[in-house]
Image (tube, rainbow, N blue to C red; front, side, top):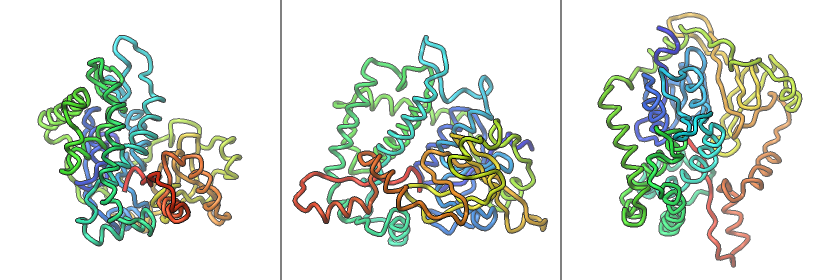
Length: 389
């Protein structure tokens, strides 16, 4: 089987980020197979069978290349499954032609859909009814100072903030367009709004915020995309199927690498110089916001302004073969890459990131520090989770 005939992805049923990826797969008419993993680590399907410690979900494999983060996964699917056979996820505006606002859609999805709207969904979850084991895992993921009872008490404030954001979306859709950027088919901007809003609308306490009388165009847009996805699932019931972790590992290790790693020169000299790295160096990659306690280590095989690729060694390939390498691809935005053994820049780098993104991505620990140092401040502080857990 060709490595591009049926990608393999890893996730769990309740994950809105997995739903986001599945929406992309359905809209692009890409058949794929899912390995079900646990809601919380350990996830031996990844950590043991593939020797990938990365803890955020989903991941997607194309042959022996494994892609991390839906931001990069979407770009890889668009590159390897091009139109016209597979509809573009970056359609042009109606009557305009052109590139389909690719950069705009990527930036909008990353910094508004993932980093803003999804935050509200995270805080609006009924955390006090979530199993203790999941709460403790998310504290490790977000930071030990997360107070789930305090989040529950702030629910009405979060509803108000969500309502303010729905006004913006309603304004964009108010001219009667079917899709967010006035395209003939839904695009990546629609996907990045839909996954967060549809998930929030499924919460019983939050559902009334989505009042059709207040947001008629937004509700109609949500319903339209829900209906389209339901139609696509019904028309191709075997497009998204399941595969066991063991069978997935055998298929991945039996497949070739995609060549070249990124469809471009392997290591860009300027970026390598900026990061004090070189091809073949042992490097680590970790998120810069949440889940950063787990790093992925490997040999640097590709580096650009958009992507970094490590070659890792598995303990042993399935079937009794010796150790086999995988390539793990990370997006550059949102991730820190550095040489193994180099002085950790985390305190300096993460502090700078927090300052630059104070409005949109303030960390939980900073939130707690601000609370204790500004007792008289009546403004509401909000902490920002990552786009996947």
